[in-house]
Image 1 (cartoon, rainbow, N blue to C red):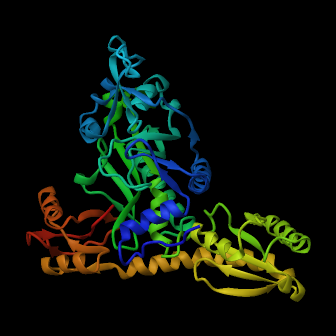
Image 2: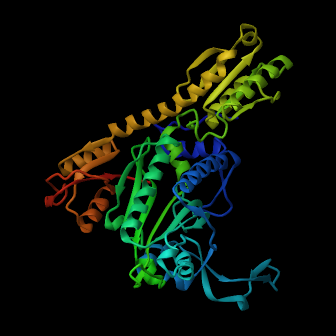
Length: 488
């Protein structure tokens, strides 16, 4: 397995692509802008999915599934929503192919045109709220707390595996409530769930915030987000939770009889994270030797490599270690491949990000010990065989915390307060990261800053302290700082 990866310092974009391919996460697809998620990459997504699914269900949500195809007319019912997604929609116009009479393979049958075009799901608010109209009549039918795991299509022109693809996997929660307060509490709750998952499972520190009106989800009254910082100083929006107000209820005539026996429109939220999180995972922790995975999400947490090759006594010892680790719920495998040398195997497991590697040779066995190598720091130690299970259990916790601490230290070092335009530009050009600066609150100024620097307002941090100041661009009064950054 070729190990060479373009160094981050030389070409960060190529470094990222090298890891995606050489760590066996994904391949390119025959369809431009799409990807084939390989077993190793999909196993990481499954671990993310399972953890999040448990967190959703613990907060009262249940799963459902809605159609991939959405009638075009549905997207016309909420003006801001259709405006936000119109340029990204894939449209189905025909339902049949036929043989080309000129011998050119198959062609679209012109007589099989749909009466109404169908949109390949870019997000599901419209079809779900059309369904909720039949489900909701009374306050007794509320709240509805649904989530679905699905794929969506947004026809992106500039794509990058995991970070931005034409088709991607995600979850989307869609909830219906009897009051604005209840819906707003739901949107904030799910923001907290996302932040907890990012920090406790991904070991990726995030900032919880509110999007500006210009950056708000199309059709929402308020959008909350978690923002992370990657190793190249660019921000990544890692998840969003939206308070939709009554916009979709009004668009689809979803009303309920409240406790005062009056008709009222339902209040709504939606929220989602996607396989973009795998891109965030790569760029938060990985290095020039390959992928680095936090133990809680690693498909295999520990690999045992017999040295120089499997032998009966080594296999027996490895199986005992495996049984002890599995009894603690640790995901472990024994590499019994006798076709490749140990050095090749070590490089391979380093490349794919396995958190802990155990090297077990005849000399180790004779000494009653095993060599333990950790992926995050590359440190090695010899551990007694009868203590290895407890040691590994504690080590995995230590690695998880170390990855978070390292990423948080980097993030915190790259939040810079500035008060002038010159300082703002200098930090963006030379240091990167989040720039905490005053903004006059206007979309016109926000767009002007983006045009001049390519930096956007990533968020207004939750519980942001008020502070009198002046906008870095216009000099107009400002009451608080916001976080700017260049972003993916």
